[in-house]
Length: 135
Image (cartoon, rainbow, N blue to C red; front, side, top):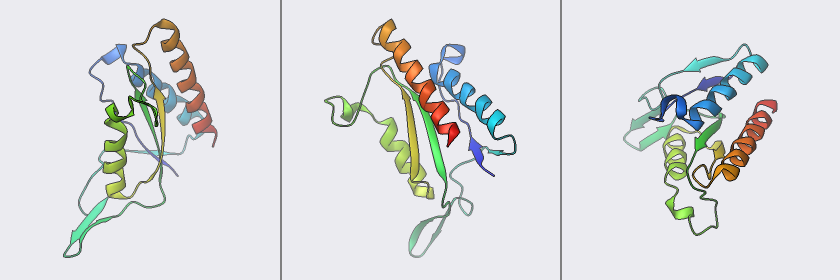
């Protein structure tokens, strides 16, 4: 059984692309995998990490994660704008801290780059989410 952690962090409410995409993902996931449970707390001493005289130790192992993010620009690896992506490394850091390193990122990027780029980005993200559900 898979556990799903669904966090909505966008202050944009109903206008949020990430909320719209993650809602689609959750609804499709529930249909495809109806027996999966939900979690609501992440970094918890004694639950997802421990600490002793040797330091910190991750307690979450063999878990896969899909993170859905909406971004106004595009920050692909190797691009001049890549250094401006602070979300991806932070999320890798915090989830790696508890032991989750198998992370798939689905980006709806370029949302502020005009209507055509926005529609293409949303369509690409929707396709990527369907692929994530299928495997």
